[in-house]
Image (tube, rainbow, N blue to C red; front, side, top):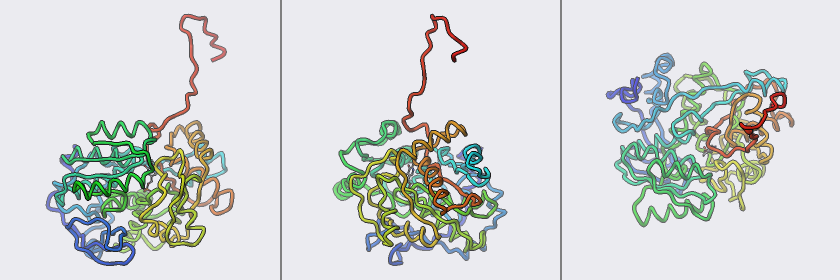
Length: 417
Ligand SMILES: *Cc1c(COP(=O)(O)O)cnc(C)c1O
């Protein structure tokens, strides 16, 4: 069925958004208005009339719908179907890392990757940006701006072009080349900046004041969380309305971790799952681990990480405005935050590719490396069911050249090939 005739988005559907709430103070704000950060300078969370959702929809109904993220429309903020800017946000598969697992003496059922690289623009940023851009259209915004380490900018560019909105994207000058080019190819104005993502974000903030752009930075508007929340709704549904023991999530701004935690809470309140929760594990790189440092120090806010450096560009985020939401979720879940060095990340990528034919992105590789470290130190048992998030398609990243050459005019020694 083509996207235009999506049964998950019939025109007369009911919506259930009741209001917005500051994630820190609980201060309320009206839905259906343009919002950035709350007066406290913190992210807003979207709230729904969950009692009404519970009365309106059943697990069977969600199970029967087409498998894309719009099947969860009762828990999504877009009011009018014509504002949805879909590029086909499919359900992403759960893929066991069977050979890697067996080699460690683990059942393949206990080491599963949720492969988000299958989404439009090749990363899970599509989930957040399709929602933010759809809401921007609904609220009448015209020009959207953001800083990016690559994948968010690409998703913003794609959905803005699709929706007929303007996109302005600033990225650190060492952002992977493919990301910078795909952003431009998909119609955004993209600038390389000699600084890190938070420094790009500061320029975006000034541009919004000077030029009236709308600021779509991570968690500085309320709707990217709602898009990323669908990772949690989808995972629970795929597991037969259950949750795994652990979720290993590569954490930059933390939108996905915060979103999934919110998803499980909403699912319990509408009676679709029980009170069991996965332990949420925030995975960072040793070269940029502000959340891990704050977790270990018992703090609720994370200080900026100086001289951030890692091959996993998507998690090179020195300071996160939703730090307390990440840390709260990790602690409430009984989970932990863990940093892994780049060499372990790269050897995890190499392992999964050679042994299981699964090309993880470096951020996904970091989750496998973190899982191994947590197994080794006893924080995870071999019998625990673990889901790792692979957030982007591995093909977007540089790969080492391991090929050799053959001369077609020479005598080929086939025994040596
Ligand atoms: C953005 C990104 C992350 C981090 O996601 P957050 O939800 O913002 O923490 C991880 N991996 C990849 C590939 C990304 O693009």
